[in-house]
Image (cartoon, rainbow over all chains, first blue to last red; front, top):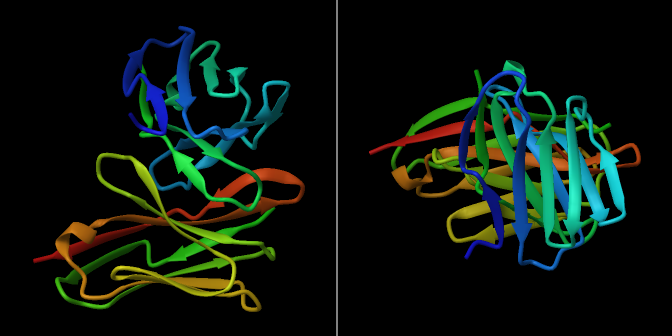
Length: 112
Length: 110
């Protein structure tokens, strides 16, 4: 099994629908991150969490929410999906600041 | 907030050539990351370095902290090296997480 697992791998949804992307990890890392990747742009940070009680907004958090259900699980929700949220979404974990990152395989989300 | 610039954006080379990808950043950092993204989309961490040079197989990463510049080199390039290579630096400004370059799309032709 992968160290960081994202589900689903691909999803097509309609404008206005609520959708949840899930991330689980077996690394035992406290820090978890959600990034989105758009063609021609670098990955951008949506939300990050240091533990279940510590959730922080990233640079592009509008339209998104997150839930840290346990140390190992970090979910990203789109409350009302819109087409410009079509992107590749990555979950990542890190042991601590200054340590390396482990990325999930990504979720390709299309909003029509 | 750190700004990360990579060059070139696209690079096509012949098998066996020596490849260099450059990365510069604007804010002093503790460590810089080099990542590889294959066409399937997954991202793999190649290096995290804070000084000098690191080598893994045919990949070499160097960093000059004073000049805020890093390079990724591939020796004896092979078609399987074709991928997007991304550098990333801590975001800084009190925020956690990384700021990523836009990536270098590398194609190695047989």
